[in-house]
Structure formats: C-alpha cells, structure tokens
Length: 474
Picture (tube, rainbow, N blue to C red):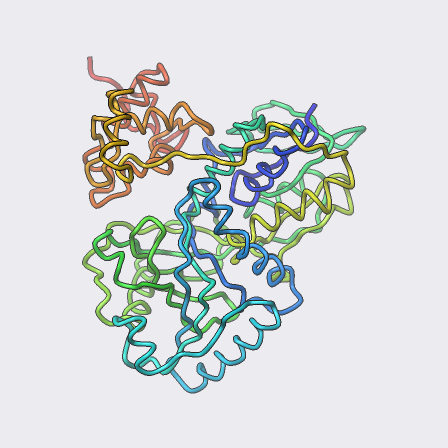
C-alpha cells in the first residue's frame, strides 16, 4: 500500500515525487512508457521564463514567478545544467513595441523584477546577430535556460535514491476508489494507494476518465523544433522571443543549457501525443528564425523534433482535487511556463494538499543533492582519478559528445535506470552530437545488451516495437 501514487513521469510528476520523498511516506511513480521524460518534458524549449507573459491573477502567473525564484538553486542542487542568461522579447513594429510596455506592466504586477525596455545600440550590443529591423525589446534578466530532460531525470532519480519507487510501462487504465485507490495497468498489474496525483500531461484527461471524472478537457498543440550544433551555441547569448500571441510565446531563438542553439516551436492543434515533424512546420521555424536573426546558421542544424504541449480549456493550470473521486488531485494543462513552475507546483501540492490528507514527517536522512557529472567537464586530474578507479571511463564511446563507456554503464545502473538507447542518450548525451548516433549507437546497444544480460536483438531504441535489430545472423 502506497501513501501517494503519482501518475506521469514528466517534470511535474518528477518534482512532486522528489518533494514527497523528503517525508516518511511510501510513494511511487507510474509511467506508461519504457522510461521517464518521454513526453512533453522531453520535447521542450528548456526556457526558465521570467513570468511577465502570464495574465495577472492566474495560476500560471503565480507559479511561474515562484518557480523562477526556485529554479536556479533547484537545478544546482540536482547537478543539472542551468544558466540565468536573461531573455529579450523583440518588437518589429510600433504595435509590437506598445505591446512590450503592456508586458512590462503585467510583469511588474506578477512580481517580476528588473524588467526594462532596451533599444538602439544597447540592444544590438547585447545581441549583435539580431535583425536591424528590431525596434526595441523587453529585457528580463531573471530569465534563463535549463535542460528539461536532465532536470526531470535528476528529480526522479533523487526521489528514488530517497526511497521512492518507479514502475514503467504502467499505463493506468482503471482507477477504482473504495477505502483506498486501486490503479490497474493495461497488462493487469495493480497498485494500491491512499492518494493519487494525476500528472499525465496530454494523457491527464484519460487518467481522470479512468477514475470516472469527466471534468478535465485537455487539448494539444504540436511544437516543431530545429536544433543546431554546438558550434552555433554562442550565436545568441540570450533567449530571443517574438511578441507573444494567444497561441503562445511563438518561435524563439535561444541557446540551450547544453551549449546548442534551438529554434522553435510552432503551435498547431493536434490530437496526437507523439507527433512527427512536418516540412511546413520546419520551414516556418526557419523563416521566423531568419526574421529574428537573418544570418542564423541553418547549415548547422543537426536534428529536428516535435512535441505536444497540453493545455486546458481555461488556458490556465488545473490544480485541484477531483470532485468525483476524493483523494485524486489533478495537475493538468501544465503548458508553458510549466517547466519553470514545476518546483513551485510540487511544493504547493505537498504543503497545501497532501499535508491536509496525510501526516507529514520529515526524513532525518533525506539527501536532496545529486551529482552525475559529465566526464568531459571534469578536470584532467579528476578524469585520471576516475579512470584509475574504473578503466571504462577511459574508453570514449560517443566522440561528438566525448561520452565514455563508464558513463553509459553508470546510467544503466543508477536511478532511474536506463534500459534503451534513447534513455542512455537522455542521461549521457551519447548520440546527441553532430552525427546523431551514427557512430556510437551500435556500441551503446552492445553495452546495454551486456549490462542487461539480454541478446542484442532485444535492445530497443525507445521501448517495445523499436528493436534495433530484427534478428541475429549466426
């Protein structure tokens, strides 16, 4: 019997699980995929939003600002790449320039500090590659960038290190309420718990319906991205936004926390949870990026990807207990700025909801720090010491990102354990470089087969049905 069952292994579910693991509770996370962070939190811009965009008085505005204030220390504690580089919302017309002043007033009401309008030579000194057609920009120095998948994995891993449990390939298709909840998976497995927290992203409506609650109405927007090589990572020093529209913050040009440059996303209505990129969408991204920065080096694109942003009919976060099933709490419609808001949402759910349902006693031995450093970021002395301890750290597997065999083995063994090629990639960056796994993927697969004790033809890219080899030739 669990005290709390969290459904959904994205950043919101992960940060809630970590917050719960600090108390003497038995908690678990249910994820329907083969690994955590395979949905909305994976295909994400990775922006730490300052908080000026959300309408004042909304949950988005409240948790965005609170989450921004928490994020930099939160990421540092978990050893996750994060940088307070600031952001600029750029105006290309007098109408958009007027909108900047409205955004600045809204930001001030939301509690965002240090906002100001910049223009002319000051603006172009800040961003030399910005189009000279730009008239002005709203400067938000508290904005930043973070690695969304590394944050999610680190939060869940830290929670597991502190006693939380993870069940993957567990799609919740039935949630029955008696004296407690019984959650049943598609393959017939069951778990029981006193409380259930629904953090299923695009699937949150389906999870609510599994409990007999038809109150949630969740929709999706497809966002397509282009990712550029590290050699272009310094092209923009800050996140560059267009003036926002009702569909979102629009296509951006931004450095990433891992040193690349990202362009996107689009915003197209979709019912799919796992959308593909489209020629039209990527052309739109390219055109808008060139309007922002005319010489953006599109020849350095190394990959494209797409994701779904789940949103509610109210266009605000849904944070409430189900009216149909007492003890079921919805964290739904967590679109942008959901990543930034996640640590604050987690704190709210635990202190303002769970604490009123269950007694909370802090663990004396809780450790909130986590360190899984990349080998390439260590000093030569630290690298040599690690190799002396384990020679596998001296064997480079991914040349583009300088990922060692030791790091891949560690990713397979530590929490949450990597079981697929893509899971290894999200933890170590093996396959995220210029060749996109063209050279290292076979070696990663061989290491997985060896460590998991399975035939090579059973190793998958991202779960059942994505086997890399059809059969072995003997």
